[in-house]
Length: 463
Image (tube, rainbow, N blue to C red; front, side, top):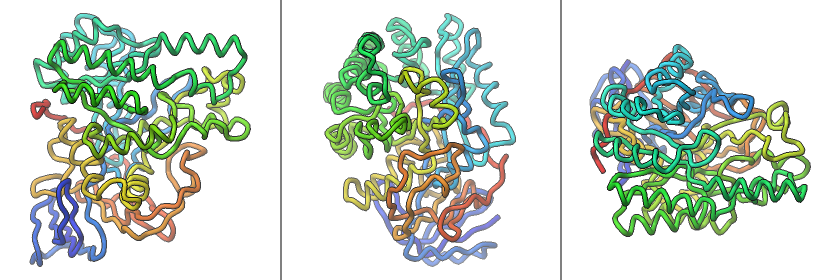
């Protein structure tokens, strides 16, 4: 398969320029002006952007949670991703009791086999940190191709501080990265009991039970573990002004604390929990939506460089049949999570670039280039000769109104219903294969399931 993309504005993390891109055998073979290659497919991208495919490093496909499971599996989730211009993802692989890291990885790979429409990798999440599991960290980094490991400071499967220290030490030795869900579980437990006593159990009190200070304290504590070990850590789904202040404080001291945030924490706020009836449950996720003040602080943190990555925390549950299964009278029983993988790129362009909050080049860095570097995706993240031809032809003027019926995620709502978008992917390529394109009034999947493959990532030596 050969493709020649002509006259598009190629966008990198540092600059933009008009040129042609020649693709052969799934790789970018040449970039230049007036390229003279004979190609099977010629695309005139004049007036459009040529972007590296977005990479979503935080998804939960088919994840068992709170008595049910996330509704997008590896087929529906990766089809939705492709339609949004996401050409790679890194899914969380929650270790089950008694499993080795290898067993957990093989279990999740078996779920993905022959289903994935785009390339994927896995982050092992360490929830049963037996001594032999800690010892396996080296193999996971150097042999399995999974150099990043998630831990939780909340939920029943959280790890304690001693385990966090051990993981920070092991990952430091071999080029790995610990990712942490940073919230103080004891503060949350205390507030849950208080609200239960008061009978205030609507979705709004989900947000009140997980205050900014719970994230702030946990980020601070995690950063101190990093300071002591000389290792590095990555805060997932940073949501609050206060949490960000602790990231900034650590980084100013030279401590290796990195952070991601998500569109929901930049665009939505806690007023959403007050929507009529049970609709506030759409936004029950952890951490919860914050205030407009935190929205603004996070945009500033992105531009300052204290937040390096954008992700979605995609974890969808239907309102009808899942979120209302046990939680109509108790926010604690509402499955935590929301859909977002398909709307990542469109939202960051329309709400970020078009509104002047970030530059086009910063968007590419946040969604592609920095993500590939952070997580060891050596062949992804840039329009550069030798990289995989994961390419999005993006029309910066194309209008679209986000509505659940025109999206592909396997869920009965989108938290962004009705948002007017400027700029949409019009052609999406995964390793040189077209997987999605604009048709009539939305993007449609035209690839095939099974095209995607598991990508072994390299050890992280760039920090």
